Length: 93
Image (cartoon, one colour):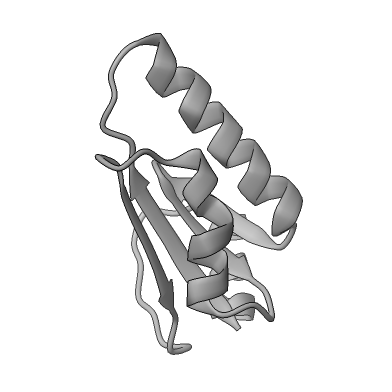
């Protein structure tokens, strides 16, 4: 299954950079089949559910942050991505 992970970390400054780096590192290590061509947005391929992914990522966000995990339907349209980005989307949505 493919899932979109989107987040907004609502803390500015150094804490934001550290939180963002830790979250990105975790996503890349835990979900090695991923696409990350947009700021704060990943598409991952995993057998986990949206709730399981959300729960896995909760330790990396604060109560004032926003996190969305949504299962993708397989249909998509895009613009402006390089060839490898578009190819990944065609193969994994």
